[in-house]
Image 1: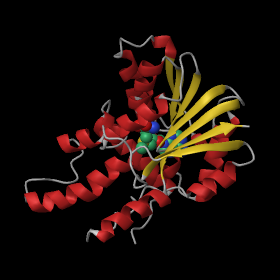
Image 2: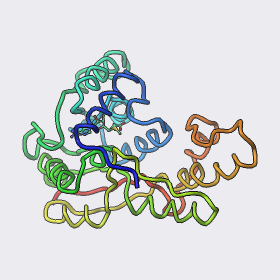
Image 3: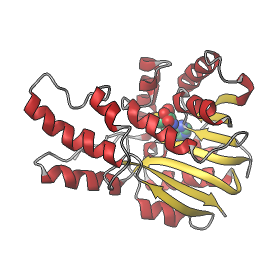
Image 4: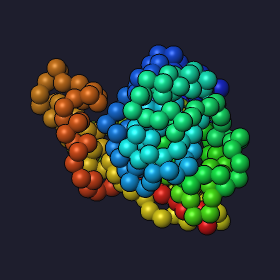
Length: 265
Ligand SMILES: C[S@@+](CC[C@H](N)C(=O)[O-])C[C@H]1O[C@@H](n2cnc3c(N)ncnc32)[C@H](O)[C@@H]1O
């Protein structure tokens, strides 16, 4: 089993990502197609003028796409100062977005500086999985719940143990090895998250928005690559095949990445 990163090592990892990728989407993840799908799925649940907190926004790639496509007023926070510097540069270069609509600041999900009930929605994209144990994850989730107004939405796009296990079951059937959880991540247990938030948030739905994409790119693509030969790298997320599959409707329950939608009671 891969040894897990400590919280210090996870923070170092994100600083390295910020320094290596600057203003590019790759600071957050190489699989830009899933990032685009996440934004599309989350945008459906946001409306013009809503006050939104984007927790763990990295260099603002998704934050700015959400602001552009929905007209929300959004505050993005991240605990890596270099990510926030890059996010501010990305905002300044986004001439199509009213600058007053977006702000970026350094902040930690474990202890948010924002006031109780001050947002209509809180967006959290692949952040809670970076907290090094369930205790920290619980703390971060409760902080997000605290800053939501009653009726407000928590839009949590995270990798889950259930999603990874379904994907690996499909891979095994076709002779492919299991995909391990990255050493800097601790995937969420869906029922545990719902039970933990039950007192303050109602689980509205779990959307397996990337199921087809994960099955296609993590099962069908490696099998096709074996046929095609060495010149195909199945892990290359920028291939046309990935772009095509990211436009397909979501079938099945093979997505590692899911959107958990909660409403504040
Ligand atoms: C996978 S990236 C996701 C970025 C962004 N949400 C997106 O949609 O592209 C995870 C981000 O969470 C940030 N992060 C990790 N732990 C955090 C914490 N305790 N508080 C705030 N941000 C954190 C990292 O610095 C990194 O930028």
